[in-house]
Image (cartoon, rainbow over all chains, first blue to last red; front, side):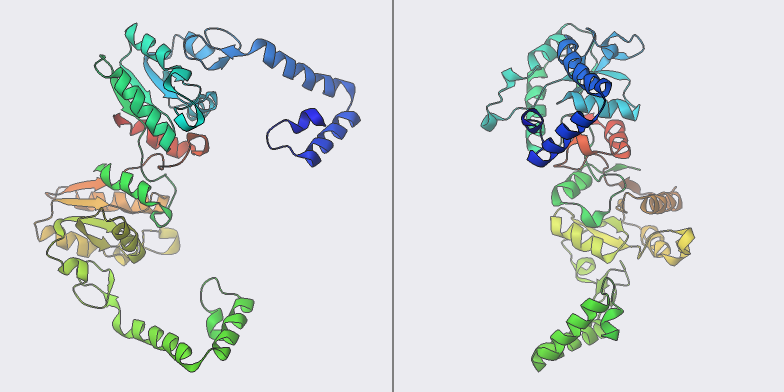
Length: 188
Length: 188
């Protein structure tokens, strides 16, 4: 119960429920969970190219010759790679920053994988860096920092489009969303 | 209670509560509500230029010489005008469609104010028509219809930007939102 309670979103009641579930379940099920946890910690590491979580290095995306290695999608977290991959719309590769700049939380640019990104661009053959950080204050600040770090290098720096979320109604849009939508309007 | 119950979102219990509130409140308060309802039905009509709700015709926005009358923001409902005006970012004028095309609900293009919009464009001096319909299936269909109706006329047809809503996280974006964000990405 004590160990379960250390997990995020699991309070004393859930921890108790989980612990009793383990006690009641057969040995194989319990050992499979224990084994999966151990295996993940032993085998999963960061890809040395893109810093995504992977069991092989380079990761399957970086190693895939069918991917467009000239376009790098820069994201904050490994989770964002999963989401963008699920769309099936990204032909390029990734670079995982492992966070965003947040001086108040003590996260400086040097704590992220920005240097490694710059090294990838400097090595050449990169045509486009797509800043796919979150459209939040921290994500935006991180994108601006990377933009300034890459300034002058022979690479197109782009950003994911911002505006009205598809499927929503103008009625529920915030001022910031409407501002992006109005200022970013384009030929149709 | 019967009359209150006819209003949207007001069930029998709320209707009862409202009716008793009226009974308990002083006569001036009750008469002010009755008067406001009567006044609205007697004095509020549609602007003959933009079809927004107004007490004067033309409406204050159409009549304002400081507005950029060469740019028309096309919206579905009067409510959308209120929202866009609240941003303070629209220098142009509006055209209220009074709905969206929805064949299954029996709403055909002829039921909207599209002909009046075309007449405004034909009259000349319009440089840009910004389609600011909702980014929903119906809003999108309506925008496409208007685009085809305006095809060939000397006017720029644009659309509000679509993409990640400012302040959100990629983690919570739908596939459609990510598609808009990826395909609409631009130089940063």
